Image 1: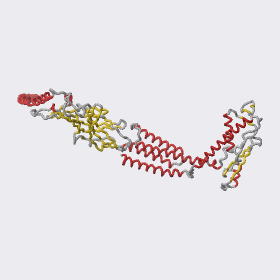
Image 2: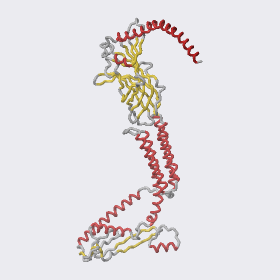
Image 3: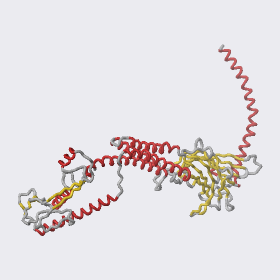
Image 4: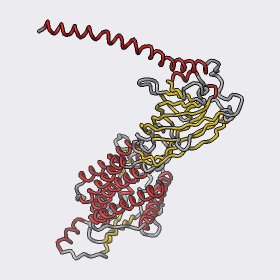
Length: 540
């Protein structure tokens, strides 16, 4: 079987070789005759039009300005950065002009030729650039994305594909409910308006905008503009493509606004917690305040450092105010509750101190001790100041206590339920030249003995020091009286000013929480209505 197969293969191979050789010999002269003629004409054409071509001179040099038209195809919007104030876009830029030096006659059976981008280095091309460009690069996969097409009448189409990061000056006062205008600015670098005129290739100057999608933005539309830019080297034509962008707020609602609303609502939970649960309410208030601070810090880090106030700053600040106000509300409740209980005894009998002494006597002794310490002496006085104290209790407010309670009150020396008005009377010696402290007859103070031989001793010392002279002691006593009189007048004036202020007394501290449960949510709802209504209808 193997031998038969080999014989069959040999027979077929011997018959096939003359047929293929014969066929090739018949068709080869026809291919050589038809195909090289076309290549020969195109190569000769390019060699002919480039023979006397000067790449340094623009078309129509010395005559009228060259008309350069353009159109753009938007491939994609890659990113928009508020921090760097720029955006990245990938696009196709096509430029059209006419160079009669590159035209040929009708004798050549070629209407147009499409060449690769390397041919652009052998002819004159416009020196266009992007005026607001920060960084650009030409795509080169698999080859450099450049194209050049020549037509019979000398018209040239020059295209390229590149990605560019362009500057975009943004106004962030309404951020994130803002709208921005970002531009593509095309300009000739060296040729003034007297040499090159640039125009948009209307009506199809811009393509692909409807299919492009921008992260966090919606493209509302676009418009093309042309203007003249004057610099120190001359006036240049500038073509501008303006994109009208509207920011999508959905991302910021879930990232910023909704967490802020939940944190503010969480701070209202403290209004339903008992006011005596101090640790729970304080911990909740501090936690919400710190959380709002963290959110505000994260938002500021994603934005540039600008001086004006943004709309998101207003919302964050107001949320922080609501959270902080909830913490202050508990401080008011706590102060009203515990402060009223601590002041109950003082309000009933304010003329006595904690040691059971009259306030005037205690203040006087305190002043004497302080002045003695300042003078470096702590005198151990012998003898006693003649002080007669007369306490009058006026029972203007009787509360119907029983007999046993009244006995307990009398035994303690202080009637806590009566309107206690202590009146301290200080009697002086007849021979003392020191006047009374209060000449109206209400109070009098004897600050020491007038006897010049009254001995004084230094506290902690072993030797007795002689007493001061009578004149020196009088001067010291008069100085003390003046100090006491000034302090008394200041105290009375302050007390009068405080009493003139309107006083708000809360009988039930729980009512503060009850009112806060309604006032805080209502104010927050009103703020949100004003905020979203203004920035969506007017500012946007």
